[in-house]
Length: 536
Image (tube, rainbow, N blue to C red; front, side, top):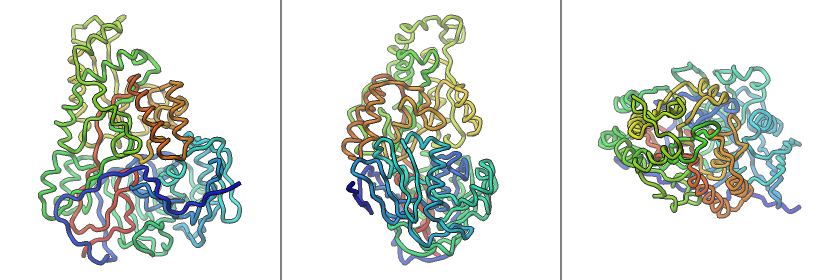
């Protein structure tokens, strides 16, 4: 069987905007040392096989190394895998694991350690829908065999969620202990190691002085420049902004739109922006029980609120109105033809609800049918509640109330949200998802068997035509074919009002002008700190 050897082939699956607002400074010669202080959000779990999020992946991306590295431009580079090959039929992936890699506890990262991690992904997460039939280690080679072709697999394995955890940690600690993490528990092989973890407060990382195996995309070799990284968990937007403005933080994540202009005018700061690739901030509509099993009700929620005006008023140029299940941050997958498929029309929304039998108006202005009020509970996690979404939700509440619909939004800790999702105790879920691969995203969010917790089909969508398009997309290794199928899927999702897309967000960070070497990752978040340095 003929194999194709891949080293650093650019598939150009994503291309996002990278802009620095504020003074443009010469980078100069990188300097070693210093502590980078980051005002950010708390990760969900320090063993991502047990639970992850964008914030989690950003926090842990330099603790755990991965098989391959993917740039924001879509190029793949060797990392723990010095080379890899894919069989002609797309079913057999062979990874050669580089020599000399050590975990933070001094144990060797070998092919068996990689196999163990991939097998956990298969056993515990059903490989997130990837049809893995076997994972085998022999010598320094790991062979992953699929039962069906899955084109996005390289992208999947490049994501921080697939960082390799030390087998010693897996053997010695429970899932709960690894999730809480801390020194001696959270053990990877990355350029930084965990030296302190205080839940609800911070995660402290220290340079791994033995590090000598960066990805081929890195800008230098050997240990990282920074001596220490302090990730401080600050949930309030104003507190994060205040920390970077006052010099108490060197980087602040999740900058709210209202603060951008002032930060751009500050000569000591730089504002970093990128278009977030992925699924826009949206409402997933749970069709597994009434009344959202009625398409007329779903369509009424989509046109009954002036979402574009709210986007412009709340996000102030840091987001654009969304009309599709993919953001423009994935150009090959985004279907611009979906733009303007619908528009705000309160009267038409009311008519749809009346056609669906919700014609009676109660004393409080909320529609009633068979004695039941037309009321929806929207569920989201504290970790997902950023970019002034609570303020925006007030606008949704007012807009829906005007057409006779009660809207309640609950922002809860992730453990509670997870339990509620597993029990199917919700009507709506609001969040966004970040990734540079549209096929993987939509397959996980809308394919009929991709239910929580293995994947994120929170709407319980079950559409054979949509399944066909999504399965064709993930089966293809051709970016153009993937993009074509993902565009078909976007049309079907809109035709059936399975999702209410709201906003295509930007990722906005603020940093001291002393911070050099920052990049964005393929999922649109701030990338590795390995090449970051501080001007002394």
